[in-house]
Length: 300
Image 1 (cartoon, rainbow, N blue to C red):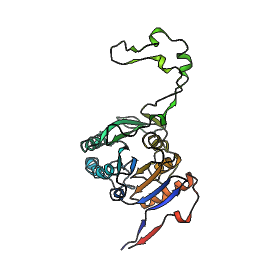
Image 2: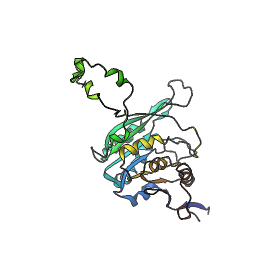
Image 3: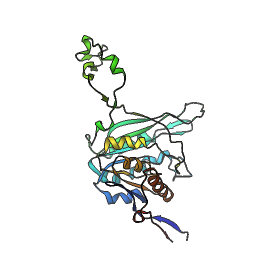
């Protein structure tokens, strides 16, 4: 019988106040240890029928049924006000987009999840290529779901500078700028420009413009640290618990530790778990500690 490398759950990184744990295993089983403890699940699950050399390939027609097996584990570990963010993209089948992504979100909502918002990750450096009936693939979905219509949501944590337009636009206000001015096309929308006086920041849009990761991280589909970082700031309180159940090379852990959140990373690929531990130690500048070193065990 072949030998198999088993990575035991082990805390592998700590700061003064938060920690990160990497677990090798099936998250549907490992999450049973975290019922009602999690503030945010942020993850990018294996895409349908993609990267067959790296994932157990799932055909788009079967993806919904497969992903629904994670519904209960995810739902049970989240606190009542907890959040779930899923980064995923469609699959082209015979030149046509297969809508397994939409069907997956619809199936989750039928199970009791609330679809709070859809975010778009705009890739500022999409891969080049040529196709007979479509253009370059420059974006991916990030779906925000929750157990309640009003989950934890810290808008102030992601505010951004209002922009240079303020200095010129607000210098001289017209009469229409001093009160709410409804749209001339009777759309029901309106604005009061004077409300912007003195403001330094504004809420961002739900489109995140971030570059693809160019450097090799030991994983075929690494998203940029700033992607999970944005959602962790927005959807998880300080020192809260963030889990990535398809953690790959550990990007979510790096993001969580950088802003004082605890994290648990789970993956069913031992090589990815080892890669995640290496990255966290290197990129978070965490010193090695014999008590925190990952432990491997061989068994038959």
